[in-house]
Structures are given as C-alpha cells and as structure tokens.
Image: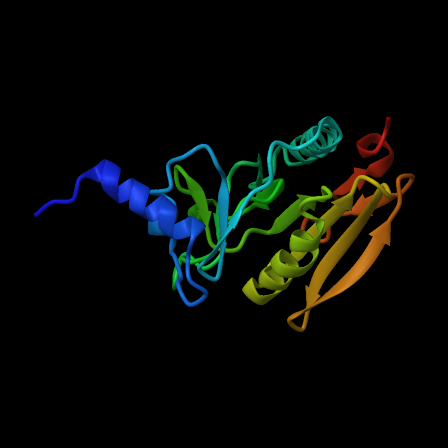
Length: 200
C-alpha cells in the first residue's frame, strides 16, 4: 500500500520536531522537510536555523561576498552564500548538512545543482546572538573533524575575525580587527580588507 505523500511529509516533520536522542537523519530525509523553516544536520541530529539575520549581519555578508567574488575572478574557485547546502560527508553517511554564511569551493567536481558534496576550501560563519554558541562549538568541532582547511568566524559585535587554520587535525587560531587586512590561507595572494567589511 502506497503512503500518501502529504501524510509522509507530515510524519517526517513531526519526527524532526520530536526526535529521540538516538534517532538520526540523512540528507535524503532533510530534502523531504518542505516547510517554512530551515534546518541543518550535524551527524544526523537536526538543528533548526534561526530566523532571518539582522541588517548588520546581511551587510557584513554582502561586503565579504563582494570581496571574495572580486578576488576569485580568473581563478577556478567560486563563492556561494547562504542558503546553500554543504554536505560534509556526502560520500559516506551523508548525515551532515550545513548552510554557512559564505563558502568558497575550488573543486568543481564537488558541485551539483543543489549542494556542495564534500569539504569546501573555506567556510565563513557570521555570528548572531542566537547562533554564536552553536557556531563556536558544535559547528567548529564538526568542521575540524571533517577536515575543513580554513574556517572563519566573524563577530559583528566586537568587529573581529577569527581565522582557524587546520594543522595536524586541529585548528590554529589568529584574530584580526576592523583595521586589519586578513589573508586567505587557502588562496595564495588573496586577502580581505576588514575596514571595508566592518564599516558603519
């Protein structure tokens, strides 16, 4: 007997909202969650995304995207902004799907019509009060575990950028302020002007 698709969708959504601690979901499940909320999966555990970001958050994201886009001209890399699915372990369990604020991908083979399948070259998260703990702890740990070579955390409140570089499977951190120029370690000769990013 075939299950009505609408009923199935409702059951999946209800399972996400009331999942048991030992329940795990995959990207295939994630694709069926067709509602007005955004989700991320970390090792099969669903996390509901916060509401729309603030104007300050969007301003920083737009300025960063512009600088990335400008410097990537003539290079094999592309920059994408949220919402864009990054499936960190697509070739194995496919149970980790994140939507970083910005992502740079240099291997075109990792791109399909909907997502990045695998580990990108650089990920950027812009903190907000509701996501700071999640970004700094859960996502940072997962990015390190996945082997993301360079991970940036931007804090709009302190106007700082923390760059995490993977060395021997652990992140080494450098912090830059709003008057600094920050190097992109995975892209030789590229750097970001933070005065422009954090300008009022």
